[in-house]
Length: 105
Image 1 (tube, rainbow, N blue to C red):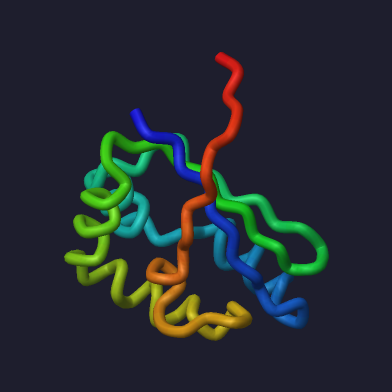
Image 2 (cartoon, rainbow, N blue to C red):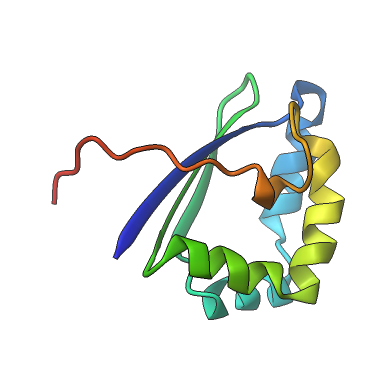
Protein backbone atom coordinates (compact mmCIF):
# COMPACT_ATOMS: atom_id res chain seq x y z
CA UNK A 1 0.00 0.00 0.00
CA UNK A 2 1.19 3.50 -0.84
CA UNK A 3 0.34 6.48 1.40
CA UNK A 4 0.15 9.78 -0.48
CA UNK A 5 0.03 13.30 0.92
CA UNK A 6 -0.17 16.44 -1.22
CA UNK A 7 -0.66 20.20 -0.85
CA UNK A 8 -2.72 22.70 -2.83
CA UNK A 9 -3.80 26.29 -2.08
CA UNK A 10 -7.48 27.29 -2.10
CA UNK A 11 -8.28 30.95 -2.69
CA UNK A 12 -9.19 32.50 0.66
CA UNK A 13 -12.27 34.24 -0.75
CA UNK A 14 -13.62 30.83 -1.86
CA UNK A 15 -13.03 28.79 1.30
CA UNK A 16 -16.68 28.62 2.36
CA UNK A 17 -17.84 27.57 -1.08
CA UNK A 18 -15.04 24.99 -1.31
CA UNK A 19 -16.15 23.48 1.99
CA UNK A 20 -19.76 23.46 0.84
CA UNK A 21 -18.91 21.69 -2.43
CA UNK A 22 -17.20 18.92 -0.46
CA UNK A 23 -20.18 18.38 1.83
CA UNK A 24 -22.02 16.94 -1.16
CA UNK A 25 -19.48 15.38 -3.52
CA UNK A 26 -21.29 13.85 -6.49
CA UNK A 27 -22.07 10.16 -5.94
CA UNK A 28 -20.59 9.25 -9.34
CA UNK A 29 -17.36 11.04 -8.36
CA UNK A 30 -17.19 9.05 -5.13
CA UNK A 31 -17.79 5.84 -7.09
CA UNK A 32 -15.06 6.75 -9.58
CA UNK A 33 -12.53 7.43 -6.82
CA UNK A 34 -13.26 4.12 -5.15
CA UNK A 35 -13.19 2.28 -8.46
CA UNK A 36 -9.83 3.83 -9.33
CA UNK A 37 -8.31 2.56 -6.08
CA UNK A 38 -8.36 5.72 -3.94
CA UNK A 39 -8.89 4.62 -0.33
CA UNK A 40 -8.95 6.40 3.01
CA UNK A 41 -8.98 9.72 1.11
CA UNK A 42 -9.18 12.88 3.23
CA UNK A 43 -8.85 16.60 2.63
CA UNK A 44 -7.88 19.04 5.39
CA UNK A 45 -8.29 22.79 4.93
CA UNK A 46 -6.56 25.51 6.95
CA UNK A 47 -8.10 29.00 7.33
CA UNK A 48 -5.47 30.55 5.03
CA UNK A 49 -6.43 28.14 2.24
CA UNK A 50 -3.71 25.53 2.63
CA UNK A 51 -5.26 22.23 1.55
CA UNK A 52 -3.67 18.96 2.64
CA UNK A 53 -4.81 15.79 0.90
CA UNK A 54 -4.12 12.25 2.07
CA UNK A 55 -4.99 8.94 0.46
CA UNK A 56 -3.93 5.34 0.35
CA UNK A 57 -3.69 3.31 -2.84
CA UNK A 58 -1.81 0.41 -4.35
CA UNK A 59 -0.16 2.56 -7.03
CA UNK A 60 -0.68 6.33 -7.13
CA UNK A 61 0.29 6.66 -10.79
CA UNK A 62 -2.23 4.03 -11.83
CA UNK A 63 -4.91 5.50 -9.55
CA UNK A 64 -4.40 8.96 -11.08
CA UNK A 65 -4.53 7.55 -14.61
CA UNK A 66 -7.73 5.65 -13.83
CA UNK A 67 -9.37 8.85 -12.55
CA UNK A 68 -8.12 10.90 -15.49
CA UNK A 69 -9.89 8.46 -17.82
CA UNK A 70 -13.31 9.12 -16.27
CA UNK A 71 -15.79 11.65 -17.59
CA UNK A 72 -16.96 12.60 -14.09
CA UNK A 73 -13.42 13.54 -13.07
CA UNK A 74 -13.09 15.87 -16.07
CA UNK A 75 -16.32 17.63 -15.04
CA UNK A 76 -15.29 17.82 -11.36
CA UNK A 77 -11.81 19.18 -12.14
CA UNK A 78 -13.25 21.83 -14.47
CA UNK A 79 -15.63 23.01 -11.75
CA UNK A 80 -12.99 22.97 -9.01
CA UNK A 81 -10.07 24.60 -10.89
CA UNK A 82 -11.19 28.21 -10.18
CA UNK A 83 -10.96 27.56 -6.43
CA UNK A 84 -7.18 27.18 -6.48
CA UNK A 85 -4.22 29.57 -6.51
CA UNK A 86 -0.99 29.00 -8.39
CA UNK A 87 -2.45 26.23 -10.47
CA UNK A 88 -1.41 25.56 -14.04
CA UNK A 89 -4.00 23.12 -15.33
CA UNK A 90 -6.43 20.89 -13.50
CA UNK A 91 -6.26 20.49 -9.70
CA UNK A 92 -5.61 16.75 -9.99
CA UNK A 93 -2.62 17.51 -12.22
CA UNK A 94 -1.27 19.95 -9.62
CA UNK A 95 -0.93 17.33 -6.90
CA UNK A 96 2.73 16.88 -6.03
CA UNK A 97 3.14 14.11 -3.48
CA UNK A 98 5.27 14.87 -0.45
CA UNK A 99 8.05 12.51 0.59
CA UNK A 100 7.10 10.43 3.61
CA UNK A 101 9.88 10.70 6.19
CA UNK A 102 8.22 8.95 9.14
CA UNK A 103 5.28 6.65 9.81
CA UNK A 104 4.12 5.03 13.05
CA UNK A 105 1.87 1.97 12.74
